[in-house]
Length: 426
Image (cartoon, rainbow, N blue to C red):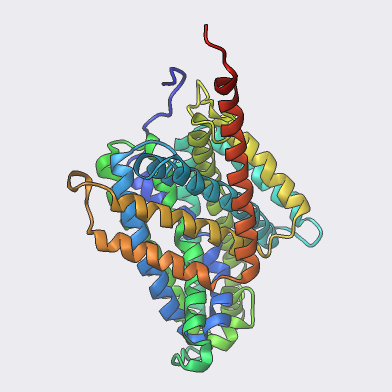
């Protein structure tokens, strides 16, 4: 057992809810509706409902497990404890790799709203470095900044919805009804997979379980509460966009909220929405850095990532080496990689991560069970169905990266066992 500095339990229920909201009400609310409408038309509302149900099932599994294992690492730890070391590794690998790509995507999303043409990548790097520094200084600063960002984002969303409904011709778009021509069942499931990506941030609360006060009580309350608020916000925004723009109008633009405001006549509202979108991306990036850093810490403690990353800062009580390494890697991705396809790749890793979470929760005994087993069965099944709807490029890329992770761990275990095999009796 490590005798070095430990993470400090400083987060209450309100802080945990805010960090979860900062992860879920992120850039997805400004961008996810367009591809969802392209896939399902007016059926995106059905897709939103499916995504919310799957997310709720996964959230109950995460909350139940986090109450029993209130340490950093999330499903990486739960998989190891309940199913075995390999299952935990697969969950942790999928989370770290997928969410690292998400970090880069959020940084580029921020820069697209906040920087002029030609400056997006440098500004994205600056955002990554700045938020890595914030996380380095301590988790309470992370929660405090996230609280400000969530307030800005909710204000911008309220302005956008109000401007669209009252400033223009409400009902001009028409929400329409879902028909088979809107992509059918497959299209609706694909929209659910895209929208689930936006909800997946509630895992950030579980990955920070080692820093929550009274985790057995706080985490099971914070995760469903944060998810419920996020679902309500997404539902209101989706219905407003369908009313103002209609499914065709949403699908025709990469920034449907900005389009709704531009057509409203409220010219002063456009900068507010742009600031809100930039703040949303920053909030998602801030929470992602914190969550990935703590999962990396847990994996490094077990040797599934280099043990060098397992250090906790003696003053700020954060996994500083893991977060610095993450920041450097994300900066490299921002500068060199086109991440437009990273959403599908990240969704592949996240959905499989939650398959492991649901399987682990299924094995819990009555003493630690807080939700019916049927929710875990439904959650695992839903994740697998949504994975099957992802673009084939995302599936192939995800399988390739998982193969690399499996080869890495198998090689490490083989090398670790070699001294034992060749040791001579004394």
